[in-house]
Image 1 (cartoon, one colour):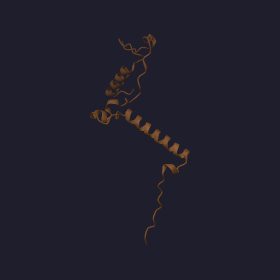
Image 2: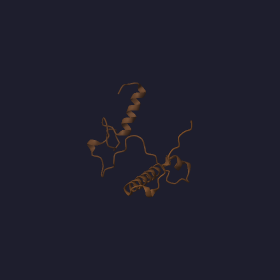
Image 3: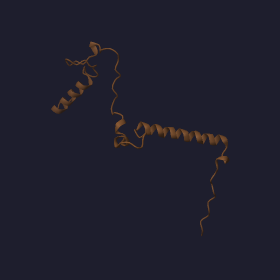
Image 4: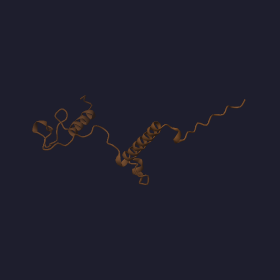
Length: 114
């Protein structure tokens, strides 16, 4: 038994209704803009470049919580880190982020629970 032939489903742009043709063009443009934005954000905006640009390492986002925005003026004394000589803003337990992490590492190394 032979396989039945498929109908030729090719359509020309003139056969599409105008609303459908404009919708298809808008979708194509949106996909193109999205791809261009994705390539630009990943560092692949120029295809001829160094390997670091191709791999996207030069423009990768940092991991973790973003740093707080720097506000105008010094940190008030009641919000400063309690370590002497440190003028950074405290985040937890009266310590700035750097001193808190150092204390946490020290406690983990000694085996004491936090």
